[in-house]
Length: 546
Image 1 (spheres, rainbow, N blue to C red):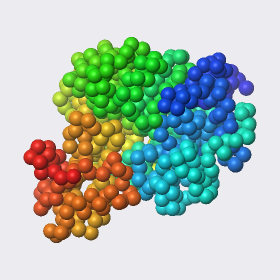
Image 2 (cartoon, helix red, strand yellow):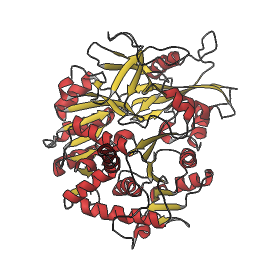
Image 3 (cartoon, rainbow, N blue to C red):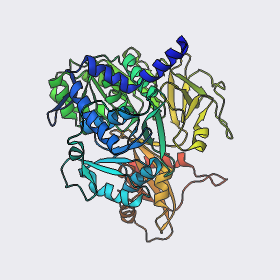
Image 4 (tube, rainbow, N blue to C red):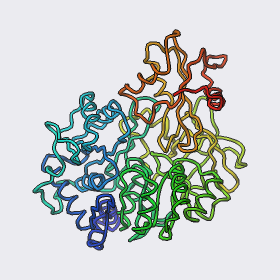
C-alpha cells in the first residue's frame, strides 16, 4: 500500500468519535467522566467504559449489526450516556428522541427509523405502551430504566439485561470508520412526518472539535448542559459528545432547576453551563437572591434564541461576564457565534460564522432557492434567507427523505428558512422565520402541525396558530379558531387537543380565541402576520382564553 493509501486507511478508521473516547479511557482511566449529584452516582472513564462494554456486548449477543438503530427515550442521565456510546462501539446508530412528544409522534419516529432496540424510562411507561401499539414496526428488544413501575411483559429492565455481560472490548466482524452513521436526531417538521437528521462519526468528532475551540473546552473541565440532551444543542454543546471527547466531566441534571444549578456550580466547581436565554433569566432571578459563588465558571453558553442587549448585560453582571451565544440548527449544529468580546455591543445579532462554517444571507425568490452567491447587501437592512455551509458538522441530508433533502440542501448549503440581515462585518441578525416557526422555551413548534390537529375537530372550520411573545418562554402558542356553528367553546378545544395522540403537550396552544373569521389576502392566502399582531393586542385586552 502506498503512503497515501496508508494515511487514508488509518485516518478513516481512527478518527472516529469512539476512538477519541477510548484514548481518554486509556490516558484518564481513573479520572471522573460522569457525575449525577442528585443520586451520587459517579463513573470514572474506566468504569464508564466497562459499563459501555457490557451493553455493547449484550447488543452483539442479541444479533445487532452495523447500521442497526438503538432508539432511546431518556432524560439526561448516565443511562443516556450509556445509550449514546455503546452503539458506537459496534457500529450501530444511537437515536435519542424527544421525551416531550406524544405517543403518536413517538410511534412515527419508531416507524421511520425501525429500531432493533428501544430504551425508555419506567416513568414513561404509559406513553410508550401506547406508542408501541400505534406503530407498525416492532423493536426486537425493549429495555426499561428505573424502577418506578415494574417492567411490563416482554420488556426487560436494563440492569437485568446487563447482568453477567462481559466488560471486555467488543469484537465485531466489520470495520468502523468516520463515514458510518453513528447518531440520528429528530427535528420538528412542518407536517407530522418525522425529519431524521443523520450524523456520521466524523460529524461527531468535528462537532466536538468545534466546541473545544469555541468555548474553549479542555481536559478536566466540568460541563453541565441544562437543556435536554436529545437536542443537537444538548448533546453537542457541552453535553456528552464534546465533553467526553475532550476528557472532561459531564455533570448530570435530569431536568432544569435554577437553585440546584447554582448549588452544583458552587459545590462541584462547574466550568461551563449551557442553556437557552429563558433558563438564564431564571438563573438570574435566583442568583440575585442567593449570591452563590460562581467563580469556577469559565463561561455560560446560550443558544436557541437571540440574546437581547438588556438580558445580556444582566447575565454578564449577575452570572458571569463570559457569556457566549450560538445560532444554528439541528441539521448543522451551531454556525454563528458571539464571544464575550462581542458582547454586549452585538447583542441581538447571531454573531459571525464559526471557524469552519460559511454563513451567508441570500435573496429570496418566490419560485426557487437563490444560489449561494446571490447575496443581499451587507448593510444590516436588506433581508434575505440565512444559509449555512457546515460540511464538518452536517450529514447534508435527511434520513430517507430525498425530496425534503433537495428542498433544503443545495450546492453544499443548508437553507434554514430564517430571514435575516447581515452587516459589513458579517454579523448576522434574524428578523423573522420564513416558515413561521414558533420557538417556545427552546422547543420548535410548527403552526401547520397544530392547525391540522385543530381542524380534525368536527366543529372547527378554520384555524390559525401563531406565537405570542413571552418573557419566560420567548413565545407561547395562540390558536385562533373559526367555528362551524355557535356550539364550539374554548373548553371543547382544550379537551380535544389535550386528548390528541399526535400533539405533544408543549405544542398545545396556551391561549385560544374563537372568532368569526380570519384575515386573508385577495388570493385567499391566510395573513398570519396580521393574526400575530392581533394576538398581541388581544392578549393586552384580555381577549385570549385558556
